[in-house]
Length: 79
Length: 409
Image (cartoon, rainbow over all chains, first blue to last red; front, top):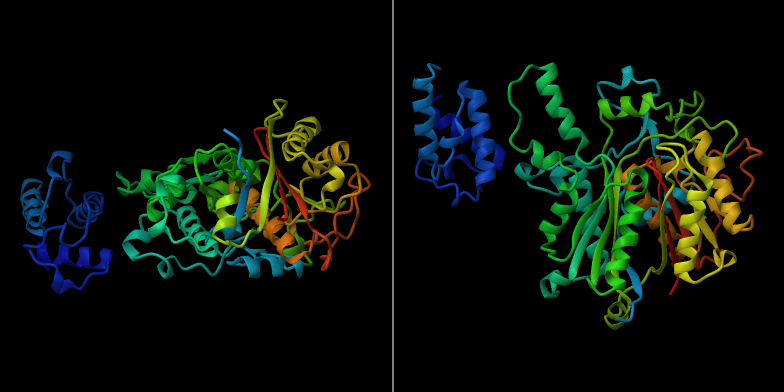
């Protein structure tokens, strides 16, 4: 599974949303996921991908933002 | 400003003997105990494998999965009990001035399970980080805050943390908010969900927990009995809607009772050992505020934990102020000790006693203790009795006493 699919599954499961509703362009606002809840998503992504997301990186708006962040950190952190 | 009268117009309860007020009270009247073997993975490591727990509570029946996962069990209990109480009061929040409605909630251990889960991750599982919601789930004011948030109540909102007296104090203080005009309606009560391995072990170390009755585990808590061995920890929540009496009468609300007296005191003698004088002081203050004499009481719901020391001390305090003529019972013999929720649960028992004109018994009282010589309504509840004025006692570790008196309207 690629980064997006993994992330989509985390979001779908946690917030009980149909997976097809979650696209790269989806904003967390449109998914009715607030900033506190995005911390929870990032927490799970950290566990899943074995990365550590620094505090200053957590300002995100869309699913694409998180996918890009994860991919960049996986490369940087060699995971 | 002239003080106002305060009515009880709604009841919500989740308890080891029933998750609504009718089931709760009929269980008490039938002497049915919610104390039983705890079904958890750590139960074999406990000295007494007992608790008064709620088995039929499904968070997902009340909250979406993502929200349920971000709330400690204690918060889930509080919100559901609050919802019941508001519905019972028939308040349509959409048309209410919610700036005039507040929330006072008592809890002893707050989000005990969440803090413990965090420690398990760190210390046992060697994780290096905790779930993002840990603070928000564990903090002591989480439950009360969530109740205010979920119902959009923007009046005064406070959490009271005075151990076993937490929710008697919250109801008493909430009454004063209405009495003195700071709010028109208060959602008040308490919640507790402390049946975690660490918390139970900590209580075990205090040597206050009951030993298991080998013949009948559900009879292990035996308040006022010569063979009592201690208390049994319990979980749940109770919330009541308190309302300015004139307002309640004007809208034709069902009024369970009027809160007429509240007394609070501090023993200031010992962190655990109760004081007869401290308890008597709170009872006297409640009676003075109510403006009644002790002989006008029809029923006392005792703190009645089932520990050696509490039951003789409370008996002496009641005798010192009220004499020996008033029926007293400990419903903890059936509900267990809900700590921060105990006062509210027992206040609800008192409301239902007035509503049904019936007195719940002290269960499992077969061997009388010569030092406990009041009428404890042993084993069999009393139906069709006059119940107009009731008193509920709560006496806490730390020495705080909270006593509530209510009267039929």
